[in-house]
Length: 287
Image (cartoon, rainbow, N blue to C red; front, top):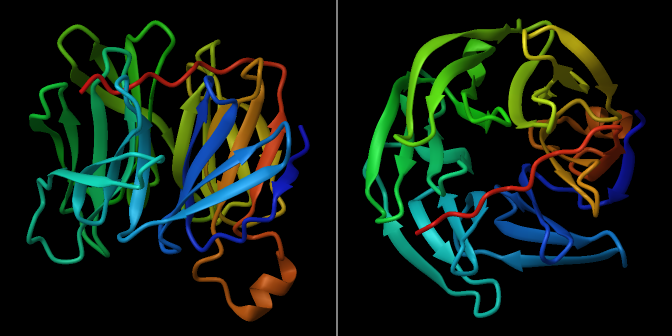
C-alpha cells in the first residue's frame, strides 16, 4: 500500500478528515491555518474556507451543514452561508484548552475531547441531540482518535501523551463506555498515536505522529499492516472514495525545522492509499 500525494495542501496542522458520501468529497481542517478544506477527487478541485477561529474537528449534521469542535467550544457551521453558530463550551475559561478530535457514533451522538499544552487535565465529552453535554472521561492528556467496531460493541480511543489506544465496552443504546483496557501501548520511540478510523472488518487504522507511518491493527491489537509515509507527522485517516476503499491521510508541518522541511517537502499535504478493504460511512450528528 503506497501513499499517493493527492493534494499539496501544505497545512500547518492538517487534521480531522471525513468523507461525504453525498458529495463524494473529503473534508478536513488546518487547525493553526484556521481553515476548513474540501477536495474533489474526481476533478482535483480544492477549496478552502477561512475561519474566524481554530476549528479542530468536523462532523456532518442530519439537518445539513456541520457541527464543529473549536478552540472556543462547539459550533454549528454552514458551508453555504459561512455562518458559525455557537452552541456551548464545557471548558470555558480554562487556560490554553481547546477541543481536539471527535466523531459521531451510530446513534448520532458527538464524542469529542480536549487538550492543553501539558498535563492530564483534559476530558472526553458526549453531546446528545438536545445539545446537552456530559463528561465521559477525565484526566486525559491529549484526547485524540476515536472510533467504533462495526457491531458497535467496542469503542477505541487515543490518549496521545500516554501513547495509549484503549478499548472500551460500548453500549450503543445508552451511549456509555465501561471496562477500559489497553488495546495498543506504543512508546515514544515508535511515535505518538493520533487520529484513527475503523474499517468494515473491525481493524483499526491509526496515524502515528512522529512515526512516519499509519498502522493497521487487528481486533486483538496485533499489527496487521504498516503504511510507510513520506512525512514524519501523519495526523489522521478516513476512508473515502466511491467504494469507501481509499484511505485519506492528513499531515502536519507544524514544529518542523527548515532542515526538516527540506527532507520532507510534502509535510502538511493530503495523501491517499488504495486499500483492499472498505471503510464505514461516517454517521451524522442528530442534533
